[in-house]
Amino acid sequence: MAKAKESTEGGYSARDLAVLEGLDAVRKRPGMYIGSNDGRGLLHCLWEIVDNSVDEAMGGWAKRIQVILHADGSVEVRDDGRGIPVDAERKTKLSGVELVMTKLHAGGKFGGTGYAVSGGLHGVGASVVNALSARLDVEVDRGGKTHAISFRRGVPGVFEGDGPDAPFQRKSGLRVVGSVPRTRTGTRVRWWADPQVFTKDAAYDPALIRERLVQTSFLVPGLAVVLDDEREGGGAETFQHKGGIGEFVESLGGEAVTGVIRLHGAGHFHETVPVLDDKGHLSSQEVERELTVDIALRWTAGYDTDVRSFVNVISTPKGGTHVAGFDRAIVKVLNEQAKAARVLKASDDSITKDDVLEGLIGVIAVRVPEPQFEGQTKEVLGTPAASRIVSAVVTKELTKWLTAPPRGEKAAARSVLEKVAGAMRARVAARTQRDTQRRKNALESSALPAKLVDCRSDDRRCARSSSSRATAR
Image (cartoon, rainbow, N blue to C red; front, side, top):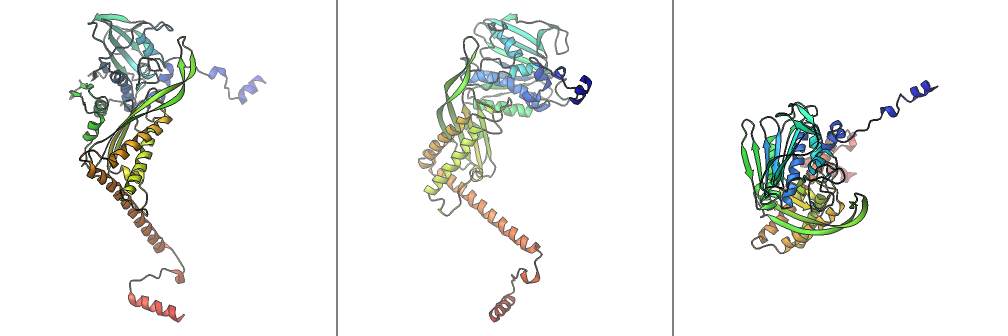
């Protein structure tokens, strides 16, 4: 009977269940954390470490970030921030460096005093990169000393030589490898991607890396970002921009219809979140958040749209609630102002999102403590309040710009309304033409009885004859 029962259940029992401990889950399902195990996943690992350095810069603690593509295939990120904590965490007794590199969901971005806003939110970025690396080295300058630790596939230890294939001995804990002036602080992370995880053709794309670093230099004004490609044919570049996203929009080119329009504002909202108390226990509390909005826009004479969105300097290519609020507000404002300025008649169709976006170049940047992203790849913002706050800021600031434009921008404000109204009319005309052509094609292709066929003709004699027959009847 026991054998029969086991057969009917397909041999499925508790022995078939597996529990993945620690970083094993990352190595087993890397796509869950970095999207894929090809070149795109490699880049995501790089951004996880870069974003940690950018968080230091946003807080005002770092002024320089360097990304090095080494000739041996490894990648290194350096910053002059405060340095990862090297003291022991009281619960695990691990140093701060070893803790954030080996434990998922460990870090200083869970509502403590370490960061006001940040891009690294889930506490898994550095540990995921560590888990997916054949070798990872960390050096921290802090307290007048240089502290170091190495890992092989997430396991701490010491390498007896260079590169990921050097002999390795497991050993926990930081070691002091040098001394520095007490005023010098910073973190250096270097890693070799694990060939057991990533595909053979996975490689870092220097063009994509350069684009992302340039973008970061615009989003954090004054930050110096260095790309040092030590591979054959590479070189070193430094990116630094003090003009912020306004300069970013100008760099995207296009024949300008307007100057750069800046929309600034902020809003508050409340949310209930679990908060760690002094004993490490979670309890739900209602906290007040502030979300700041910084938007730069410019309409061009062309037809292409290039609107980019960011949350705490993290790119959100698939949008989210902040972009939804922007879209809703800008369409509403332009409809109202176009009618108020009599650019649109009461009988005209309403302006739509596609009309507004035609020729629009823009950057939408919001900053908020602990934003809710949809997934670890952070491509979509899910914070509900962002839609309302961004919409309110755009409505107020854009209406102000259109009704009381800055000196020299009055004609440009009118041009914006005329441009979007023109796009609406072109869209309506194209739709009408398509509908007419569709009806014509339907009539020409229809197999109607002889007495019901289309009787249209360009021959006037035929038309008079038809009219006479109709009169006679």
